[in-house]
Length: 164
Image (cartoon, rainbow, N blue to C red; front, side, top):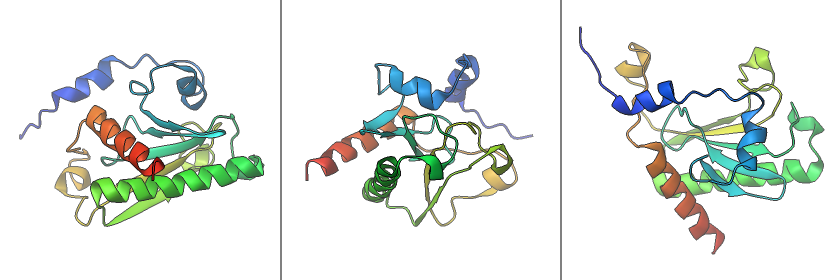
């Protein structure tokens, strides 16, 4: 049997203080955006990295308000949410040069939402061939970049694009 060692994953296994409540409500209340993987805070919506990404650059966009579905958001929140999804795609294109993207929201537990009470969108960069034997047969994702490096790259590019 072959073994794949990924010692950086131990942090996720050991630091799983599952906080009660909604992560999308709790994370913005905290001060350290880098530690909490928050890239940008808008007026009604914020952008953060997924702590358990499908690919490097997996970003989420969520409203501050705890609502379960997109159609009940205030119009200005929906507009800001979609503008930030669009900006996220632009930033990720510059950084990673992906071949495509998966963009979507799992609305409701039946749709696979891990936090069904708080609507949020996922933006996942994709590359031709990014699904290989490790993910297909081994049911294991191998990410080439540490989350702290991803945060630094996306945050820096976000700031650079904001100043233009």
